[in-house]
Amino acid sequence: MLQRLLSLAPLLIALSHPIAAIAQDSTLVVAPLLSPPTGLRVGDSPDDNGHGVLARWSVAPDDAELLVYEIWRGPSPTAPDSVWFQVGSAPRGSEHFVYFDEDASAQGQPNPAFVASGEPIHLRVRGRSGDGRLTAWSGAATGVGKGNWFHRGKTNILVAVLLFGGAVAWFINSARRGKELYIRPIPGLGAVDEAIGRATEMGTPILYVLGTGTAGDVATIAGYTILSRVARRTAEYQTPILVPVNDPVMLAMGQEVVKEAYTQAGRPEVYRADNISYVSAMQFPYVAAVNGIMRREKPATCFYMGIFHAESLLLAETGSGTGAIQISGTDQVSQIPFFVAATDYTLIGEELYAASAYLSRAPAQLGPLKAQDYAKLAIILIIIAGILALTLAHWDGILRLVRTPV
Image 1: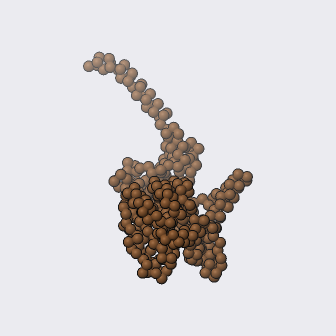
Image 2: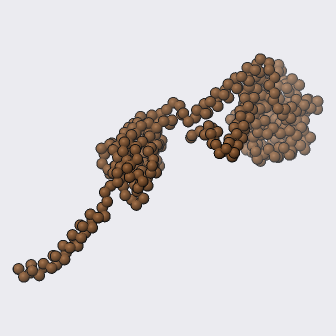
């Protein structure tokens, strides 16, 4: 037995040296944790809807050795490390981080990172170096996100709205006091009375096309305002007006607009509901039917006011072939060239929207129109001033003045 133990002694001695070496080497490679950031505070993030909190801390003493700060969230300040998860990061030197998440669910599942307004949010911070070394954790801190009534970063928008609203009120009052508000002459609108008079002299009807949009489109609504003005004049001259539409809702609106215009003109007995007709909801059947009306009725004047697509040139060419005076207007940029080429007068973009104020001269409509003109002028001047300031003086003060956070 003693001989066996003596024979195993060299082996035991040999095995003891690597173990000691490993133990000795392990003390060399395990580096102590870097110093953590301190003074973590979590509070409401200002100027948001309550789904964000603001974390602030003092940089770690070893900040120069770090690459980023990691922000982690947990269910409670004393929760075990295994249930904490990272919600963001900030570069070294940073002393704050805005944690914002307003999505309550992600891919149909509850979102654990969701920041619920009014509920406590528990965060802690640590640093990570470029070679993977970590700092110790900062102490956990708790904050609550709350919704804010006013976004201070959008004060410039508030000022602009107040200035624009004041300009609208001032111009409306000026128009009501009898002051003449200048509006740039629009040839297409100036020719409306001439076109109606021509149809009256020739004894042929007027065709009014509202396009292939819907009743809720802005251009279609603008077309209805012009229709009201045209229908009032046709009622005075007792000239028939034909309004084919492609939508049942537009049919009801068209009949009501024309009927009201005839009533205001004092000629309700002249109104005929059959002249405002529903044709088809499909694009090209509708166009074919309208073209057929042109060929049969030979209207002296054709109005195209609203949203138009591929049918614009088909309508305008047919009307031109009948010898009618044609006045068009649309906000569809791709169709404006066709109307310009094939009709006598074209209202381009905002001219269509301004038609109601131009024709009625009502103070309530002239005021906003003039205010918009001055607002556009102010925007142009601000853009020019900003370009000059950045280009010549390298000063971005104007840019910061008009910049608005999302």
